[in-house]
Length: 240
Image (cartoon, rainbow, N blue to C red; front, side):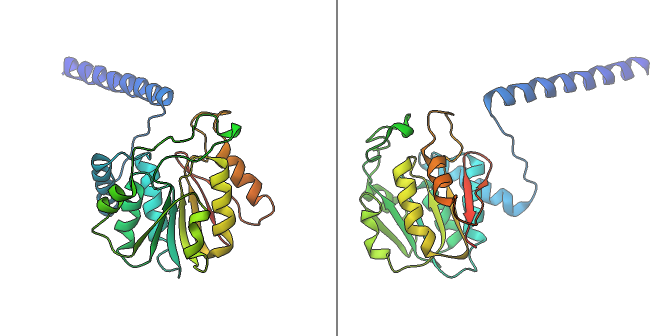
């Protein structure tokens, strides 16, 4: 009996040691473990993993889930949906999944990589993320309705939606100018309760890539809405 108890204590000590080592490793490598016992949440994450397997998506699971939930929780607000910075269509598919063909979705991208960058955008370069095309994204999202595509540099490509109102906008433009231009265009066109969400607000490379955060801080410094920092690199603003 004593030996059994001693083995039990050794097992507990080993588990504690492993837990401590794992926690330190996760802290050093910025890894986050997700626990989702809820069935509906598990289904959403399963879909997100499926999208990640289908196409290259520059979002982690939590960031993709936050986009999904923002679409879901603005479904009662009248207005269209938009995304600026589509890349290969991964996040757009997540939006389409929850939108269920109800609201119009407007997708804006050069479909040829990033436009001209400035010094504040240090890490990024003109033409980066060019390994995509309008045709490939259209084909990837062919099973969804009410999806409209606009090729070109934003906001030059926005003329056809200048009279629209919006309930949710997702920005993944990476750089200062594109983010600022998007905020200037969409903020006045957002319904109260509508959400503007952005990727890369928290710089992956601190003091090197700060264009998105700078654009948000400059634009909203005179506005009453707070910028809400989220998990991962995202932020969001709820229109008051």
